[in-house]
Image (spheres, one colour):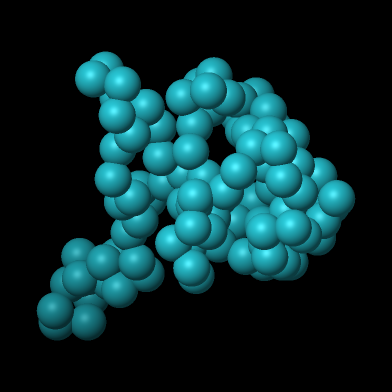
Length: 101
């Protein structure tokens, strides 16, 4: 299976198994984004629940093609707000006359 991990305007497609823990996923992300696992927070987008590191994806109802939001720890030790650009945000930049992108 795979999950879509989104942050701002970036989407990471992570191949995984339902038996993997959230910590396993964070370790995969660490390789991609060079952020320590302790500074990452994953939130299941459909429910808004923060995913727990020690539980498996299946335990937390993360299914194939689920969207997971990634937030990072800021300098003040708090996590940033979820900020995911929706596809409609990208279309607004298109020329209103129907021209090229």
